Length: 465
Image (cartoon, rainbow, N blue to C red; front, side, top):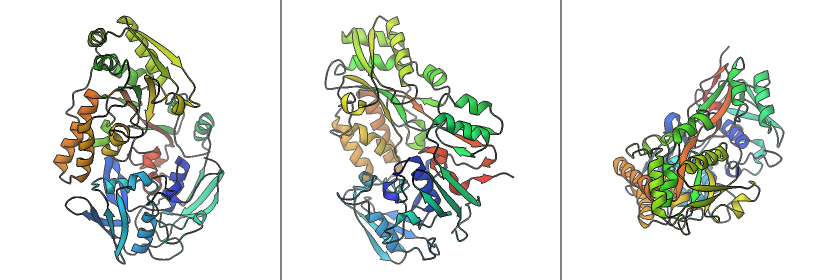
């Protein structure tokens, strides 16, 4: 947040951008409760048999805030802005399978793909994939089709919005919104408790008990698949030894981590990145790896390694405590884990992907395939354990070309199992999105991709009298 605050959807990067964007614009597809896709500006969509071409029927009777009608031209123009090397879009990597968006008629568009992508509709729920008026140059006017009309916008300070009287569906239950930034987490919680604001995002661990104990406000804790964990590089000692990695995985006291360190605001991890928050795409059939010091000792003795060094920076809430607990439990079985504390400043360039053991934090991606591909595709730029598995690469590609739901699920399960059994990743827990709200505000959706129902509260929440 700051003077870089944006109103152009393709360069949205912060929670406050996403909040304003959700008030002002709509996308083609919407993520609803429990990861269900729902029509938004696209009434319906269909793919050809190998997911290389999609047809979207655009809703009729929708108006921009300036009174002009939404047409296929606006959709094609908005979506083509994400394509090409020169595009400033921060989401262009999500749409690299797309060759072009084409108009079929006034209210129908096609997406022509270079490579199959059965995840395209889910990717269209991303915060940057909003539809703006064709040819827009001054985005600070906020000419969208969304539930609220932009009244004033001062980057780095605040924006005000009034209800769109011509909104194309029910919702938009507030008369007006004021969106402002309070960057200090303590001050943010204080503003909620004092009644100065009605909603805040990202309640920090110190403020959680204060909000829970205060009158008239509550904590909203949403399970997500974001996680923090330990990278053990597979291309060097000691991680090239599979038994060493297994020892580090079996020593994780996962239940205690969630209970004591995350204070219940998380879920147990199973050493792969697709947590239960992914709903049906999570492989529930894969057995949970238990906390088993005897097994950890067996594997570590088999590896012949008796000590190691772990680089730790506070990259996400709780990771330092997780590493200290791991160190104490390893000591009990005769293993010496040395913890080298380093600052987050410069960490991603100097330590991550370089030191043989380091800590990492990953946010939740829009699909299970995307969540695995960014970190575990062979040769991927951010393959941070250097685990390059040929079968994994084949499955990532094949799953995007598969349209049969049962076969897609089978492939996702096989990939999660490969990571769980083979990679150098230790994922003890997934962390919740923790926000705060006045008890007067009700109807906040359960969408795990960001604060307050992934910013969808704007359309669906209401205020009790």
